[in-house]
Amino acid sequence: MKKILLALICTVYFCCTAFAQKTDTITTASGLKYFFKIKGSGPAFIPGQLAIVDYILTLSDGTKIDATQDRKTPFAAQVPSGNMIKGYNEAILLMHVGDRAVFMLPYNIAYGAKGRAPIPPNADLIFDITLLDVKAKSLSMILDSILFAKPVTADSKPQMDTVLKTFNTLKKAGFKDLYVSEDDLNTIGYELIKKHPADAVELFKLNVKLYPKSYNAYDSLAEGYMDMGDNKQAIKNYEKSLKLNPKNTNATEMIKKMQAGGKN
Picture (cartoon, rainbow, N blue to C red):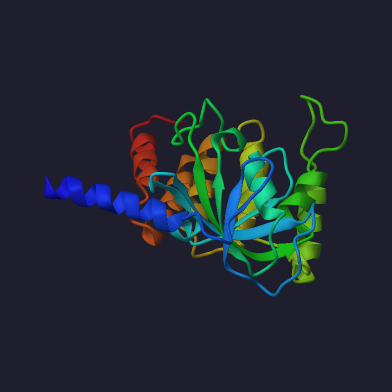
């Protein structure tokens, strides 16, 4: 009984403290409520920029859904974007670089009546967001824009020579004014991995060179080799991934599967 009561008290405390109706809480026309924890001294966010943020996402009862610090990497996305929920787009447009603010998103500007696992239907969300920096573009935006000749059709082939040449040129320039993260090449690689695994492998190789201490980079490279049918290289790179992160259960399972002849 004490444990149940304590859990209830903690939940109520979190909800009250995480989003207390403070005198400086602002409510927008959409129903978004927010207040600032820290006011930054940087420039105001300009629509169309890439927002680089740290965030903690919870349900209104205090259940944590996601946090960038758990992955040890910020989140970057162009805002506004049709890929982002309405409440997130609106929140970022209210911020300056250096701001930390707490936003309460009603379900209708979050994931709606249907939700999206692990977020349940009709769920109000609380975003604790710090706007770390802004950039005009990311490496992935540039490479993705030249990956396929326009118009793109079902038979389009990746323009890997152009992609690799552009990557090398940008790298020599120190990726000046670009946001670069481990996800850039990884994301594009996974766009290609099923239909063009050899091209995906070339991108994953570059990612390993950029992030040699990333277990996830080696895990992706291993998957690319596995989809090519090169189990020897796949196992070799899964083993490298495991050395960096012994808790990478995906690598363990894939090695067992290939050793058992589950993938040729």
